[in-house]
Structures are given as C-alpha cells and as structure tokens.
Image (cartoon, rainbow, N blue to C red; front, side, top):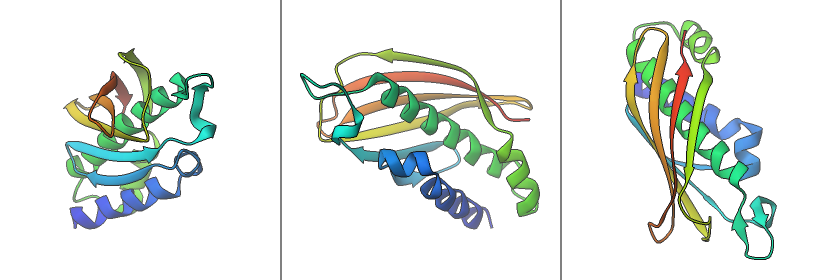
Length: 149
C-alpha cells in the first residue's frame, strides 16, 4: 500500500510544471531519501560567459529534493490514512527555512540532486541535500526545514 502511495507521489512530481521546465527526472524516491537528475540546457544558465548553472536553479532544485523526501516521510508516518487525507497533509507542506552553500560553479552536462530525511517531528521536518554533476563533483549542499502540519 505504501509503495503505491509513493508511486502516486512520484507521478505528481513528474506533473509539476516547474519540474517539467527544469527537466527533472526522478530516479529514486524512498521514505528517507530521494535522487533525481536533470540536463544542462541554455534556459538554466546564469553565467552566460562560462555556461554555469544559475544559482536560483540550484536553490530551487535542492528545495524540491528536500520537500519531496519530507513528503515521502509523511506517507510513511500516515501509511494507514486514506489517500484524500494524505493529499491534504502533503498539500500543507511548505518550506520554512532553506540554507544553501554554493561550493563550486555549476559546470556540467548532467546534474544529480539527492536529499535525505534528517528528522521528522509532529509539525516540522528537516532534510539535507546535495547537488553534484555527472563526474560526482559536489556543487552545492543545503539544509531545509519544512512545515508538515
């Protein structure tokens, strides 16, 4: 039952217009981690002289990764709840705080975002995130705090 609910969350992820514009492709979604990737394209460039990924894209992608792993944890925490109730809980999830550390320029052809659930309480949850390129060069890290109730 939980696997089915995670698959529905995966489908919802793919239908978000912003995710489609960024080209996000979900690789793995679990109740404690997520991995997805996207290709560099000209619309995502912030430094046109060097072809570097825009910092806002990096921040948005890491926020999406953190939010998705938190939403997956809500499914686990409320595994016996009906789908409508889960949808209402997930729909209330929002970012409270987001800290991004830009470690290197966003150079690459493929970018991989990962997030892990750190802790989930009754009202807030915490996640940590990373963005690497296809050569596993760490570009940015982040931590996020999310309202879950």
